Amino acid sequence: MRPLLMSLRTKLILAVILLLFVLVGLIFFVIEKREVSAIYEEQLSRGFLEAEYLIQLNYDEFVVFRDVAGAEENIEKQIDEKLIYIVFYDANNSPFAGNEFVKAYEEIYQNSNFIERELEGDYYSERRELKDPATNQILPVLEIEAPIYIEGSPRRWGSVKIGLSMEEARAEISDTHIKLVLIAGLGLLVGVLGSILLSRGITTSLKKLVDGTVRISKGDFSHRIDLSSHDEIGNLASSFNEMSEQLFLTKKRMEEAGKKLIHAEKLASIGRLSASIAHEIRNPLTSVKLNVQKISESECWGETEKGHLEITQEGIGHIETFIKELLNFTRVSDLNFLEFPMEQVIDSSLKMIADSLELKNIQVKKDYQKGLPPVFMDGDKMRLVIVNILRNAYEELNVGGEIEIILSLQEEEEGKKIRVEISDNGCGIAEAKWENIFEPFYTTKSAGIGLGLANAQKIVEQHNGSIRILKKEGKGACFEILIPCGEKQ
Image (spheres, one colour):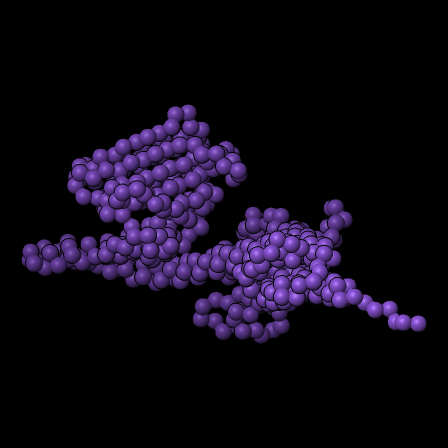
């Protein structure tokens, strides 16, 4: 009896199917691991920042006054659906203050995760599952505990433990799994269907296909399989190109999320450093200022000496202005949201710099759309943003220059937004500098400190809006501000 021979076509189909399962499975495994790891690391970084913020927020109550009631009042204000519990421990690892929810869990509330001695900067983290007594639902929690040190003391003064909800992270991971399964399933389905139709003369095309999928499985999502044939292999190659494009987009989104996280961490570090520098400068500067004022009031000085003292006072004033802007940048101030017409905010901003505009004979053209809805915003803070942009335009304009302000309503997928466009016909800003224009301490002016636009961006983002520089026809610069309409976010 002759043995059953398997045709080359059948062998090729089986081999391609097996290869597809291996490659797509490898891609799925690598991307899934990276996605889950990135999501968890993002939650962990957020938790570290949250713990540091809580330490700073409750520093006086915990270290200086030992005010349990004040600390617990601050803690309850920070609790939301993402931050489930907060516990402060003293140097003996005994609970000092916590929110009401966590006190029901004795094992968590009573026990600190730290041993007696740790190095400053150490953190403790673990994942837990808690049963909510109110709903009997299981709450996934990422628990993070950070030590508390004070400057000049070698010993730990205590620690703060927080519990972050992992519900959002779980949902994101689940959504990622579904997308990856769909992409992998689509790739497998198309690959199997394509492999059934393979026939003679496919060896060369198959080699190209295999080489391309190997590169994709190694993470080269920008690679495209170049096959000009309009048959089953061509379709399969096209499907793999679509899959790699989706993976490439996913990778880009991950990179963007990483950049945003790094940017947030950088701003937080700059904020802490700036606040420390401002504090160290302001105290001795106040003493210097008072002594200079006292000396300048003396009648024994000549005109030359008085001139030097005036220059000194002017320099102290510049330093105080710098410290004020530095502290405004580092503070996370609460906004006083009220309904304001944007026209009113812009007009009041123009009045604040009207004298300066008149000195250069600068003309202001206003184009306001009629019937615009009011906006929930902090009018004073938003006025600072507008004044900052107008002042920058004024400084760049020559005598007889022009500023144009356009106010309109813009419809977007997420809702209506008020659009403010402020442009001038000055020398403009080089496009190569746009990427850094909102960075702290970046300035194109010889006398600037580079915090004006950084503060403006922070305020606009606190309103869930956006600010950017636009390309403008002709010379000059153009800034666009978008603020959501409707109720307070």
